[in-house]
Length: 164
Length: 354
Image (tube, rainbow over all chains, first blue to last red):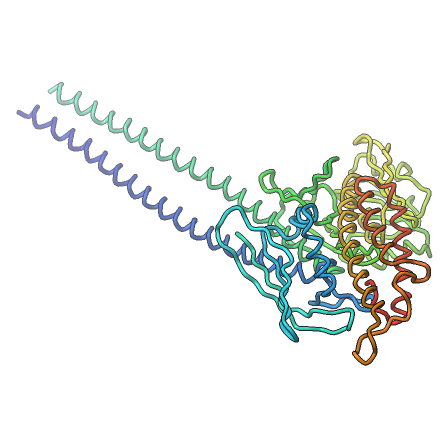
């Protein structure tokens, strides 16, 4: 009888050990899953931050491009674009080779310059959409638009839509 | 009695074996997880650094003239340009960023902190910003004669945070334990093979700069010798002079100059289109009453130069100069023509080219 009592004790102990291990692995899996979830959220936030920074960078680059900047008497005027250069650049970018070349500078973006006052006009300079449709980030930067013919300044806005 | 003892012994032993196996599996799983996370963290850090360096070089390119020292962890950054002009910044083989449209001169390897400086490249109007990168630990020795105009210009312009000394004689120059030395001879006939013996087993190379834009890169032919290979290049513009000072070798210099002239071909085209419109507006005769300026001279003939044609020629020559340094001298001649015409336009209070 004592012999038969010992067998169930040993089996119960074995099951206890296995149960402890199962619970342990379950807790480990839960902890890992939670860790990866937090990491993913952090990575998504970082990606959003990078995309915003890239959009602002594109807008800032546009206002300092030699292809668009205003120069008067040999001096570059900050935050100013030359209206005649805008027309010239827009025409040049209709050429496929030039458009491919400037892809290195502009990337997947839509670049517009809008003259706001006096008068109103929108120049659609460049656009190349991303093959991945993951939304976009929009940035605006105020600038001056200079007309070298009558040497007048207008208020304008650089609009950059950076495709993700 | 004996049967009960042996059962207990088997059970105890089996328990311990089971514990060892399970413990071993758990430890292995934890170890694998930690190693993978470490590798992922290193790759993430390298990618983050590569991106930050890219952002810094972009902003340095926008804020020309500034010099800044960037504190970085002790990690190696590589600037690599192949013969096919594929140039990139590498921190880790997986974290590599191409130069793309940026023009960056620097040594092949930078350990830790970085000094970044930018200058406008004018040809003759602003075309691009040249970015120069080096380590504050790298030593630059500039050998020039007192009163040499080019030497004085370099001395005036180089950032003060650079580890640079100016001397009149290369004979005084000895190795002082720095990791890397570059010796620059300005308008001198001296060659790199005449430097002191203390540099024999050290990382050193030289550049000879001449006022006419001819530069020579001297690279060690063997690691423990003072025998050098010479490679001649030609630079256009003052910013190219500093490019030669900072550039790792003639390949990087040429690749960057080709990128620059390619950009010049497009910028010159834009200026040419602008002049076409200005010329038309001038010919149609806007009057003072309407507030439009009068230009008393014709854009077709500014001191004998048709400015639009000159800009078109500049654009075409720059396009031809891509991959062909022999065309650079031609570029300089057209640039001088445009510069003179532009000065005349400013003098006459006309809408100028730039």
